[in-house]
Length: 80
Image (cartoon, rainbow, N blue to C red):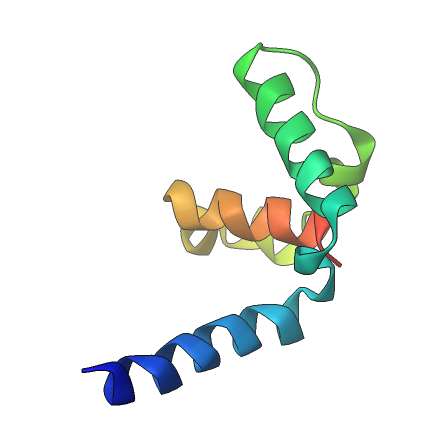
């Protein structure tokens, strides 16, 4: 069981680290927490998150729907 789970876990963590290198730093997590709290309180979206939205989002919103789309935008804003 461990022999099969370990390569999958290493691949998952390695893939996240390659796409978002700031995921291991504390500043990225503080930024993500701040964006989530502000959006839940109904405050305005921080400029950092607004600038992280790719132009493809405005052309094809279908790929950014749901929780995964929100994670992609927050990840691009805080962890890159």
